[in-house]
Image (cartoon, rainbow, N blue to C red; front, top):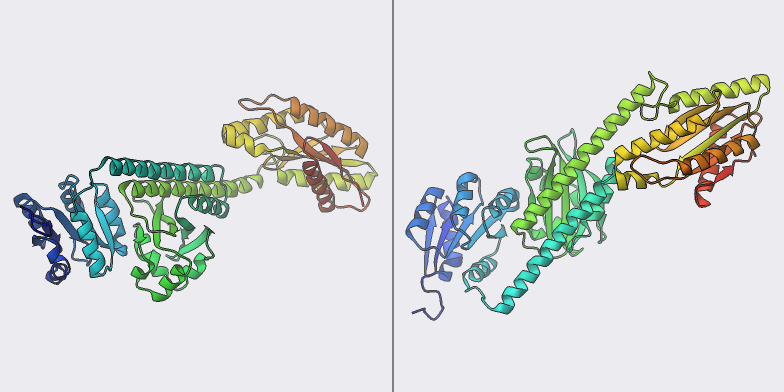
Length: 482
């Protein structure tokens, strides 16, 4: 029969190589068991498990002498769902995350006081509730948890789609992470050539700046994260820095999770993503998997951002050796600016009129978001080709940036340039684009004024183009000379 405490046949097994650690656990939790065995190695723990019905296996990961790896994973896996409690310092959080993939387990981030440890042991030793209501509630909680995890994946995918430069991407990623229940602050950090992590972007629902959090505390994240490991601290005080703990607790922060970012497994470390939580969260296998996948998504975004920067730099170099835009085949920006300077000098010398038309494709980013960048590129090439076919041989069409173009119209006054812009506007609106919806364009028109240089002329054009955008797009604005 069960004894008064209801613990008959409750046998525990504590694993740690250090005899002093084994004695500490025995003193703190020995009374929680009818029988408590200890093991100083994985082999001896395996033997004890084979010879005894172990109610609870406790694995202590504190200290460098405690091994990790496949043997420890196999030990957890051998429990086949039976209770396992892992005691783990935050500097070895990666091992705990790996063990959750082997089967259900509980954990405590150390250091942990004896009362908290006893409570955790008692909870795991208590008979499982087997009522219909508790089972239904458990399923509902799990469903809500999985829905939240799926939602954060979708939010990150939207944040990363179309992100071009790292700082902008960092802000969007952190904003997406803060949509997850409990995350009150998120930060993206990049690994620098100096071996440190540098803040790229952050977002928060609390009044906290990561610059203040990391000031003088780079070891907090750098030591595990720069080894390519995650960091989990379930109470700020467990980081061993009272000032740090006070800073976070003042803002209601209960937990911190940081995931390393790598372009590929075993590849160079790109940085880390940090998340602060305003409530305690017990990380399950699904949590670790989800946030691990999120880190992979962010890593992919960082790699793509770096590739875009390299492509932009290469494109800039190419403009030094070719006068044409590689995508559309029309004159590129550098050559277009040179043509404009030359035509301005010629107009001055011979007293000829000169007009310039600028246009920008309206809401072109929507094409990229809906149909992809390949379709967007084809659309730009089609528009450029269509506009080029409506120009005279003496006119020059140049792609200035992105979806913005300029037409240098020689021997042309403002009213004729305005008429040309209207023709081009109607032509663009009627042009069928391969694989995408039709688009419109906003135009501005300016005639060269006496004693006006290229920069002043372009400034007038851009101001008029902004007016056309504010006026509702798909219209032409005349840039009047001052």
